[in-house]
Amino acid sequence: MRSTLLLLESLALTATAFPWAAKLANSDISALQSPSLVKRADVCPVNRPRKGAAPYNEYYPSKYTGARNGQPGTGKGGVQVPAPGDTAHAYEAPSSTDIRGPCPGLNMAANHHFISHDGQTTYNEMVDFAQNVFNWRYDLAAFVATFGIVQDGNVLTGELSIGCNGGQQVPNTGLNTHDKFEADSSITRTDYYLSPNGDNYGVNETLFNYWNDFCNGDFTLECMGPYMRSRYDQSLHTNGNFFNGPLFLFALGTAALPFQSFASYGNEGTPSVSTIAPFWAATRTSTGHYTVAPGTERLPSYWYNRPTSLSFPEIVGQVSDLYQAAGSPAFGGNTGKPDSFVGLEFPQGGIEGGVLKNSTPQGVACLFYQLVTDFIPLSLDNQVLQLSKVSQIFAKSKLTSVFANFGCPAL
Image 1 (cartoon, rainbow, N blue to C red):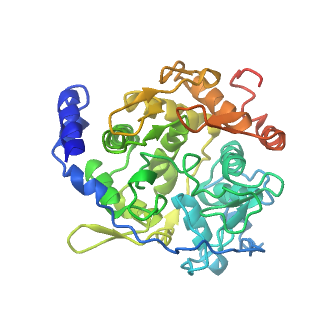
Image 2: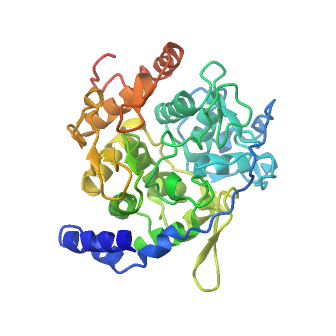
Image 3: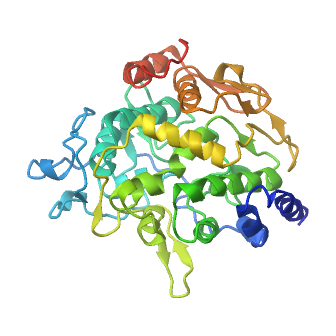
């Protein structure tokens, strides 16, 4: 109750500066910490050897971008996905032995066999999927796939579990691992230390409905910055172990997905809840409330991808814009109780006293480069994920050309 009052008081003070705060102040905040969560499995299934993605039938190359084997595609989109008649990529619900995790896009890809249906994927599968389904440009597809594997996968095999470890040889890997890809104050997932049953990766039904109400069912970039700030504030005021590390910027990148990638026709379409809901495993009831079935993410019927490809510089620019639209939230964390925030010191990434000194697209890109090629701070007490030499070599082999034009200092 005290946390709720603190949050409401803080929002009342900031309502003038942030018009969205008045809307949040009138919401039932207590409901946000009463999540509807059902874990798919108490024990992580071991899926070794992995099954692999369904191959692209040569009859359909013109229906996608032609990306194969981790190489660039054509970048020509605006086509229906899955292609009519492409039954190999029809939706198939996951079984209890299939792994699903915190990324709605990868869950959807597995359910449509664009990556391995068992949830154990590879660099090549992810790069091909991102280009063929969403029509991301090769540089963005390569960055996201590399980022995931360096943080949570096996750089020697180029493999990644999209949820729990699932038998990967490297311990403490998989996208479910806390404070790497999965982090606090995400769009629709419960903070790790606030989850009543350890599920910090499944869609939180209450949060999905809150998000829908906050944005009035229209998930534009104009709404997503203030919404991400509201989630930051909720964590700050209710989670004594809240940590907002530099990977918050990656979360802002995912906040651009409803508009840039999930809407039919992407940035030329409308990111309405009717289109976005299937990506979050959400179904509308007769009352207008949405129920969720985590792990059943899918493409909407008669869905078309972006006509033009989405590039890495474009998404970095939008992360910069979203960060500023969210009020440039401080990096750092609480020290055991709500509202005990201490700023993060991470001078290597341009963060001092919790403040990102350069929040321009160039500053954001160079912070990403630091995180994917050197080390990542995981806590206030200098606990870091130090990337191995093998990981650094893997990342630089994939991304040197991606960052070439940003003028980032050599590491």
